[in-house]
Image 1 (spheres, rainbow, N blue to C red):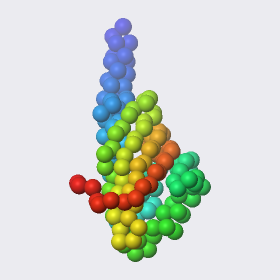
Image 2: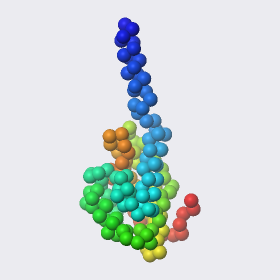
Image 3: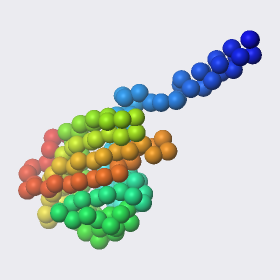
Length: 154
C-alpha cells in the first residue's frame, strides 16, 4: 500500500509542474514567438524569422498566392527583402489577439507595419499556431496588405 501511494504521488508530482501549460503560459509563448520573429527580421536574420513557422509544412498565403512550403517562403523573403537594410525595412507587429482553440491550436490576428524608404507595407496577419513537440509554431499564415500609413505608436 505504501509503495502504491509513493508511486502515485511521484507520478502526480511529475505530471503537475510541467505537464501542460495553462492558457496564460501558452499565450505568452505564442507572443514570444512573434517577438523573436520581429527581432530576427529587424537584424536581417530571415532564417531566424522562419524559426517561427512549421518546417516544412507551413501554408503561407500572401498577395493572392500560396508560397511553396517553408523553403519557398524563406526564398521569397530573401529574394524580395534581402540585401541592404533599407530594402528589408523595420518590421513591427501590434494589436495582437490570441484565441486558444485547443491545447495544441491557437489563432493569432495582428497588424503589422514594415517601415522602409521605398514601398512601406502595412496589413493584417491571420496565423494558425500549432503546438508541435511542445513548441508553438505557425502552421498557416495569411497576410492581407493595404496602403501604408504612418508608423504605429509603440
